[in-house]
Every structure is written in structure tokens, then in C-alpha cells.
Amino acid sequence: MTSPRLPRIRSGCPPRRWRSWAIMALLATDLAGCATQHSAHQYAGVIPPTDQIQANASTTSVTAPPELPRMVTAPTTPGTETARDPGVERTRTNLQPGPDPSATPGSKPGEIAVEPNASKPVELLETSNAPVVPPAASDYPIDLTTALRLAEVENPQIAEARQRIVEALGLQQSARVLLVPNVNAGVTYHGHTGVYQRSTGQIYSVSNQSIYMGGGAFAVGQTTVAVPGLNISTPLTDALFEPLAAKQNVKRSEFEAIATANSVLLDAATAYYELAAAETSLMLRRETEADILKAAKLTQSYAITGQGFRSDANRAATLHQLVRRQVERAEEDAAVASARLSRRLHLDPVVRVHPQVPGIAPIELIDPRSPVEGLIQTAMVRRPEIGARTAAIETAEARLKKELARPWLPTLWLGVSGGAFGGGSNIAPPLVGNVGGRTDIDVMAYWTLQNLGLGNLAIQRRQRAQVGQAMGDRSRTITTIRREVAASLARAGAAQGRVVATARQLDTATQGFKEDLDRLKNTVGRPIELTNSLELLSQARQDHLAAILDYNRAQLQLFVSLGSPPPLERPATDPLPPAPIAYPPLPLPPGMANPAIPAGVPGPPPNPIQVSLPPVP
Image 1 (cartoon, one colour):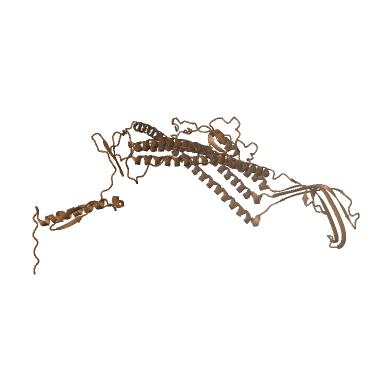
Image 2 (image 1 turned 90 degrees about the vertical axis):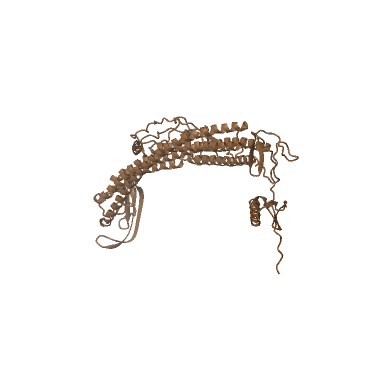
């Protein structure tokens, strides 16, 4: 039995083509639903109306995607500009405030109608002058000249190096007096009871006593005074060569003290400029914070009145908070820089050190365009490290000559004694008597071969090795000095270029910020342009400050690498002002308060720099 055939539906297109159009419609509807699924998942409980599509004789229901809630927008009219932001739609006409015709009931004029879960602009923090780092009990203003003079007098490393000079002078004096006799004085009592053997071999019992008073000690019987009143016992090799080695050791200590002072003064000058840069950075950060606060308030007012985007207000407020964190970090850096400088100057760290004059400007010591060969030649003559290494070589060579001559030169022994001597025995009474004067003179000279001469060879080999080590140390020092001069010169040249470049960058950023601020005040520009200009201006300020600090560091390193301490800004003729010196104060050896380069060393190179660099505003 066959089922009855349904009547064919007449339409304007064949059945198969009609079904194809229906399937395409279904696919398009499904794709539209997938595209809006992410935005409409929170509105799944809303049931929208449906559309029905009939195919053949059956009916198929297709559900359309839910309609998303939209912001109430003002109609776009000619001459207006529609501004879009994620989740916000409104009309902006030349940033002029005006009534919003699509505002929701109960809203104030100019207010933006947003969905209930829309985020509000970030709250702004007012600029606060209260530091995050606790303030110090007292402050001590200082300049570069005072810092260098305090470091020269109070730095522990410099004081220790100068005490080594005093130690070397003491060793030199000891070497010079090796042939000066020792002086001994004393009293000797000798008592004997019992048997005694004569030179003939006869044994007899005797009880005797003796006493000695005067120069020397321990005079018994016919033997000489064991401890002479005047005594010399010195190898002639030590007496001849040790003063030469001690003299070179003094020179080495003096050069090393100068090198230590130059290094410490370089660190002190660098620490001073780092402190000045840290306080300048803090000042610039606070200025940027005040600027960004004004811009953030202006941007927020535009967002509230409908003149700008809420995202711009949030961006400006977040930028203000980030700048505030940078201000706090700058306060920390300034406090740490003050403590670092106080440590170099041996000052009480409880007292906060700060520059007398705020700001930092490039210093001009050596022209970065100077030929490196001439600067290296100057360093070879002036650097105290080379003098110290040369003195060390001469010290080792003098001691090598001493060991080579030791087997050929004798040891000199001289004893001279004089005093009162008396005594007696049971054979020749009285027990203590017959006191009279006594004089003993003994002179000896003897040669020594240590371990049959093998010990002398071993010592000579060791001294030759020490001479070679000293020569290698001097070669390494010369190589280091050449590298320091070349590197410092290259660093100074590069830093000078960065100072000039960052100065132009700072001028451009400052001009751009002023122009964007004027455009925003005149409701022509956008707030995001002002915040971007502020970020660029802040970065330009910090870049210019860092470039000046790098340039000053390079100039100081180049100047010190030529063998001179950092120069003073003013003559050191005035007495040092009272300073909070840390306890305990350091002792200063007499006559060593202001060590200088030895006489005969040429003066510092000329100052041919001609570049004029602007300071940080």
C-alpha cells in the first residue's frame, strides 16, 4: 500500500532552491548568535522574540540572538563627531558641554547614562609634601669642596693608608740603626756549693760566691760577661742592604697612600654628585606629580561632564598614582645617597646631608676630544700606582742583593762591659769581698753558610721570584691605567653627546607639553594627548639628569685616571665648618694632613674644554 502523496506547494522558486535559502538563513542566524555570545552571556535569562521560517509544508522555529542593552546615545547630526569607547557611546561636538537629549530620567544635565555595572573613574590622590622616608633629626648642608676636604681628613681608608707610611718610616729607622749597639745594665749574683774540678782534673769541695754590678750582666769567674753592656750582633748584609729596601718601602707606602686618597676622593665626589642628582630627581618627580594631578583633574572633569572619555580619566588617574610611587622611590634614593656620602666622609649617618645649592650641572675638566695618546703619556708620569709598583720592584731587588751577598759578608759581634766584681770562697775567705773594677771587650766576625749553602740558594730563588712578581704587578698596573684612561675618555665623549641630545629632547618635550595643555584648555585637544606629553616630559627630564650625572662621573674618572685628585671648586684656605663627625674621630699622623704628589712630578694637564652645556631646569 502506498502512502498518499502530498500536494506540491507552488512557490516562486523551485523547492530545492527554496530549501537552500532556508539553510543559509539558519547558518547566518547561528553565526550572529556566536558572535554575540561572549557579550550576552550575562543576559541569558532574557527571552527575546523569535522569527519563524516555513519550508515545504513543515514549520521550523529559529531563535534570534538576544539583543544587547546599549548606552543611550544622542542622535548624530551634521557637524558632530561620534566618539566611541568600549561600553560607551555618546556624541561629542567640539568638546562643548551641552544637554544630552538621550539622558535617562532623573539624571543631571551633561551626565553620561551608563549601565549599572559600569566602572567609575579612579579616585585621585592629592599631592602630598609628607615624605615617606622619616625626616632626619638635623640637616647638614655641604658643597663639593667641603665634601672633598672632609673625606681627606676623616675618611678611614685614607687614615689607614697614612698610618702605613708611619709604619714604613719606623721600619726604615730600624734598618738604619742596625750597627748601633744595644745598651745593657744589670746586677749578677753567683753562688756555688759542692765539688769542683780544676783544669788539672783534681776534684775538690768548695763553696764560693761572686757579685757583679755595672754594664752588662752574668759575669762568672774568668769567662766574659755573657750579656755585654754594649753589644752589636748584626749580619753586615742586613746593615748594608736593609736600609735601601726600607727606603723604597717608604716610597711605596707614600705612593699607595696618594693612590688611596685619589680613589676615595673620587668616590666622595661621585657620591656628592649622586646625592645632588637624587635630590634633583626628587624635585623633578614632584613637579611631574603636580602637573599630572592638574591634568588628571581636568580629564576627570571632562569625563564627568561628558566632554571626554572615562578611559582617559582612568588612564590619567592611574598615571598620577604611578608617578606618586616614583616620588616615593625618589625620596628613598635621596636618603640612601645621603647615607652613602656620610659613610665616605665619616659623618654621623643620623644627620641628613644635602647639597647647599640644589640642582646639578655638567662639570668641565678635560676635553673629551683630547688625543688619547697624550692623556696616556700624562697618566704614565703622574699616576701614583706606577710609582708604588716601581718602588716595590726596587725593594725586592735590594733584598735579592742582600741574599746574594750574605755568604760573603760576616756577622759582626761586639761586646763591651765594665763594672764592679768581687767574691770569695771557703778556700780564700771572705765569701764576698775583694771587690774591684772589671772591663771586658769582645769582638767577633764569623761567616755562615745556611744548610751548607743550600739554604742560601733557596732564599735567593725566592727573592728572584718576588722581583718577577713585582715586575708583573707593574705591567698589569700599566695596562690597567691605559684601559682606564681610554675607557674614561670614551665614556666622557659619549656622555657629552647624550647631554646635548637629552637637552634637545627636554626642550622638545617641554614645548609639546605646553602646546597640548593649551589645546586641552581651549577644548581642542584630547586628554590622552596631554597625559602622553606628560609622560614624555617626565622621561625627558630624567634622561637629561641621568646624562649629566654620567658625564660628571666620566669627567671625574678621566681626571683621576691622569693621576690627580678631584679638583676643588674653591681654594681650601678657609677652615672647615663644624661637621657632625662620627664617633670615634680618626687620628691623623703629624705632617700628613694634606699629602701631595712628590716634587718633580708635572702638574695637571690644561683644561681645554669649550663646550657649554645647559643645567637641569
